[in-house]
Length: 192
Length: 370
Ligand code: HEM
Ligand code: HEM
Ligand code: HEM
Image (cartoon, rainbow over all chains, first blue to last red; front, side, top):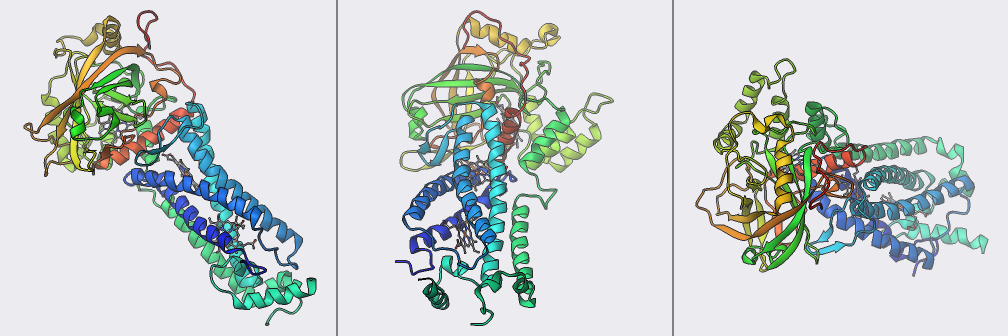
C-alpha cells in the first residue's frame, strides 16, 4: 500500500518503466529518421515499443483512476499546481496520440504493421496517401511536442527536488524515503 | 528542518533567489540542456555531413529538378497486376507463405530508372519491375528489381556521389568527363560493374527483359536455417535484342506503349528463379556477381494480365520498399538495403504530400484494364 503523500508502487513502476521507454523511443525515432545504415533495425524496434507504450498508457490511466495520485503540497501556489496538472494531462494525451498516429499513418500508407515475426496489427485507416502525409507530419510534430514537454517536466522535477525541496520529487522517486515521510506526516497532521 | 520555516516560503521569490537556489538552477539548466543536445545530436542536427535520408533525397531533387508528386527515382512508370503460381520448390529454402504451392495475387509497377517523370524512353535506360505479393493470410512481400546483372555501386555514399558525378553538364548535356573519372577512381568497383552491365545486351522491351534483385537477401526455412539468396524474374517471352536504328521511331513512350499493347493481346509471364549463395559469396556488395555455377531453384511463375495508368490508390500510392518482407525472407548485410528502405520512405512521404499530375504513360481506354 502507498504511504500518504507517495505515489502507489504500481504507479511508480509504470512511471519509470514508461519514462525509460519513451525516452528510448524519442532517441530511436529521431535517430532512424536521420540514418541510412540503421534505419531498418531501428524502425523494426520502434513499432513494437510504440505499441507497448500504447498498452501501458491505457493500463496507467486506469490505474490512476483506481489509485489516485497523492495531492500536491498544500502550500504550492495555485498557478504552479495548475501548470503541473496541465502538463500531466498533456503528457497523457501525447502518450496516447503518438502511437495511435504512428499506427494510423502506417495504415494509410498501406504498409504491413509488423510487430514481431508473424505478429502484425490490422490497419485502422483506409489506404490514402494524402492522409498518410498529414499523419506523418503530425507524428513528427507530436514527437517534438512530447520532447519539449518532457524537457519541461524534467526541469520541473529537478526544481522540486533541488530548489523547492518539497514532497513532489520523493512522491515519485523509486527509492525509500524516510525523511519525506516524516515531513508528510508532520504536514498532514494539522490539516486532519 | 533547515529552510523550512513557513511552508509557503519555499515557493516564494525570496527562496528562489537565494544563492543555493540559483546554483541549483544552473545545475538543472545544464542537465536539461545536455539532454536536449543529445537529442539534437542523434537527430543529425549537429552533423551537417552525415548522409541522412533527407540529404539523399535532396540530391535526387538537385540533379533531376523538382517533380512534385512523382517518385524521386524510377519516376516514369505504369501499374500492372496479375498473380504468382508457386510450385512449392521454394519451401525447401523459405517458410514464406508465398512459396506454398498455390496462387497469390500480385500488383506491380514497371518503370525506367531516373528521376525525370517525362524522360523519353531509350534503349540505354535501366528498366525495372516492382512487385507486391499479397498472400490471403498476410505475409506481404515487396521487391523492386532492375534488368541489369549487377548494381553500379556498393554503398549509399557511392550512390550519393554517383548522382552528382553523372549529372549532365548544362553546356554539353553529358556528364563532365573529369568528374566522372574522379568518381570512378574513387570507387573502382563501379568501373568493373559498369563493364558487366555494358556487356549484357539490352532486350527490345519490358516484356522480354529479365529483372534481378541485385541485393542479396536471406531465406529462412521452417527450421530456422538461413540461406543467402538473390533472385530473378526471368522472362518467358523470348529474348530479342534492341533493334538497330532510331529507337521507337521518335515515340517518347515506345517502351511503355509496346508493353501496354502486349498486355492487351494476352498475359505475360516470368519464372521466379532463386540463386542459392555459397559461403564466401558476397552478400554485402551488389556490384559483384555470384559465380555462374550456383544452384538455381525455380520456385514459380509470375503472370501479369492487367495494366493501368498510375492513379489514386493503385501502384502509384505504394512504396515498393525492398524490406517489406514476410517471415521467411530477411535482409542480408548488404548496406544498400537499409539505405533503400530509408530513402524510399522519404521519397514516398514527400510525394504523398504533394499535388499530383498525370503520368506521361497513359493507358488507352478499352480492352483489359485493371
Ligand atoms: C518521458 C518521460 C516521462 C513521462 C512521459 C512522465 C510522465 C509523468 C506523468 C504523466 C506524471 C503524472 C503522474 C502520473 O499520472 O503518472 C508524472 C509525475 C512525475 N514525474 Fe514524470 N514522466 C517522465 C519522466 C520523468 C523524469 C525523468 C523525472 C525525474 C527526473 C520525472 C519525475 C516525476 C515526478 C517527480 C512526478 C510527480 C509529480 C506529482 O507529484 O504530481 N518524470 N510524470
Ligand atoms: C510513444 C510512442 C512514439 C514515439 C515517442 C515516437 C517517436 C517518433 C519520432 C521522434 C520519430 C521521428 C520523427 C521525425 O524525425 O520526423 C518517429 C517516426 C516514426 N514513427 Fe514513431 N513514435 C512513437 C510511436 C510509433 C508507433 C506506435 C509507430 C507504428 C506502429 C511509429 C512509427 C513511426 C514511423 C514509421 C516513423 C517514421 C519512419 C520514416 O519516416 O521513415 N511510431 N516516431
Ligand atoms: C542506395 C541505393 C539506392 C537509392 C538511394 C535508391 C533510390 C530510389 C528511390 C528514391 C526510389 C523511389 C521510391 C519511391 O518513391 O517509391 C527508387 C525506386 C526504385 N529502386 Fe532504387 N535506390 C537504390 C538502390 C536500388 C537497387 C540496388 C535496386 C535494385 C534492384 C533498386 C531498384 C529500384 C526500383 C525497381 C525502384 C522502383 C520501384 C517502383 O516502381 O516503385 N534501387 N529507388
